Amino acid sequence: MQNTATTNKTAKSRLASRGKNANGLPNPVDIHIGNRIRLKRQILGWSQEHLAQMLGITFQQVQKYEKAQNRISGSRLYDFASLLGVDVNFFYQDMPQNIAKQSPRYVSTTATPTGNEDIVGGKFDELKSERALKLLHIFLKINNPKVADKLFELLEVLSHSPYYADKHDQ
Image (cartoon, rainbow, N blue to C red):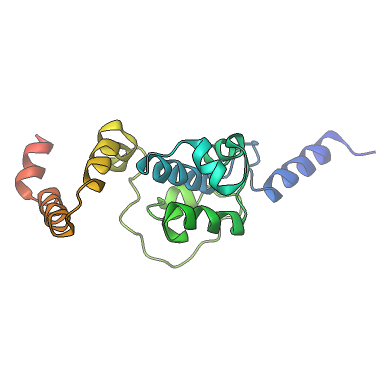
């Protein structure tokens, strides 16, 4: 007969083997991937129902993937990438190092920091805002590629402008 400590250790081990943390919460990497799926779906203006229909699954399953309640297999992630029109790496982009380190099976690498460590709870949070989504929808409606490129260049220059930084930081 197992004692309580052994039973708890076995339960925690099972959770970790299914990608959950010892406290039962989803793997932070899975949460990041789910957030990226939701972000791209919203940028495209798709409902969970629409995406689910295209994948041949229920909208509840899409909801569970987006909330990281269920983990996404490699083949399913590939399907998401194909339908959403992104490379599979899109789901891992902009992942702060502190999120990666929270994964139950985090493997340390010698990779250099990306400079995006402040994305969660930092500058990148605005990407989830209605304003950012509206901006993306408007931008995607620009039919002339040259105009879109010039507008993108302008926004890029303005985002790095010392004038903007000085005024913004005051």
